[in-house]
Image 1 (cartoon, rainbow, N blue to C red):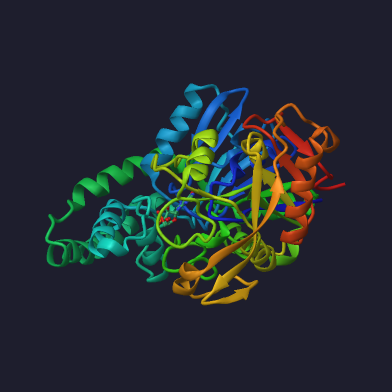
Image 2 (image 1 turned 60 degrees about the horizontal axis):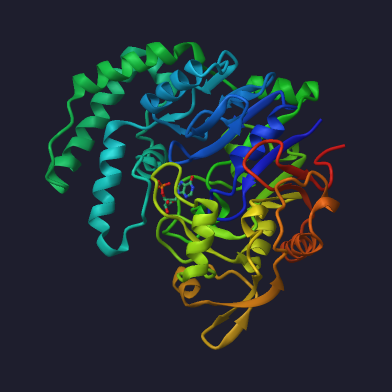
Length: 428
Ligand code: IMP
């Protein structure tokens, strides 16, 4: 019965990879619906430790079909190395498909991402430089090349010729760098196309037939709510929608077909890249969280900015995604913290506010108002039932639920699949 959207509820890196890997054992279809190889989904299971960028975390399931949906922008070279690595490590990729509508990340996208960042100087977004922004910009500008185009070489050739002429004009005249070679790109992408051809197809029928059969379908989010170009801290955002609404568009299903929206929150906050983060800790507590949790970017290796749980942002995240259940991850990271803080309001220009401002400059001026809770100072990783958690840990979780405005179903207390507490069932 259930179609479940798994949504990053903060700034990404909430641990969606683990949650999808866990749920995928019961699922029939798993669809990645947004982003590109800017994402880094860490999964630790019986096959080993994986850092996936494009292939859905559902690939490890013994039964699920894993799909890269139309809402993803795909760098074919990165995808092929990921598939090779999975195959070499014994993971079955025979039930993997790519939507023919998914746009491709081309060499000029990655090049332009870097050049655009450099031209922003002190106002750089801190992108992953994987070409994501330029690829989604081209999609909207109707200048994109899609996975399906690789199956029609003549169409691809003509499109590439037309588009590359414009891109090379920008590269040489605006940025003063060398033009990219058309024949080389064409040949390289034709090779990619030959390799990926067996996987590329119209995927919406696979998903709609699964829904009609009553199968379990997971819609796998990438990035997080506050990186959404509409509701995030614009312009310090990514370029596709990580929201539950984005799941419909990026997988090709209607909103009435989603039964559960699972908001994945870390028990604290992190952010990588520039832009406001009201609860950021630039002191030794922030360093302690970073080292304890090894908060370094999966895709770029950058140190993540760490801070306390922001309940103002969390409430907003619940509102714009319509969560039906929460997953609270990395609770174990707080095991050794004697005192914990939760941000319950902001002070903005001398006034107390309880909402997440849409103006990024206003958000930059917000100072967090905290409520303090005692830490539990005990290990949680061995807990498998909610009542096996220390009382103070249960109280912390309950307070997060109350402030975020949604009950938790899953609490993650470690990296591995089994290090999980099901507080309430996600579906009956
Ligand atoms: P882009 O998506 O590479 O254009 O980067 C835009 C912003 O989103 C930067 O601040 C990145 O650090 C951030 N970002 C992109 N993907 C992820 C992710 O998977 N996790 C966390 N932050 C991300």
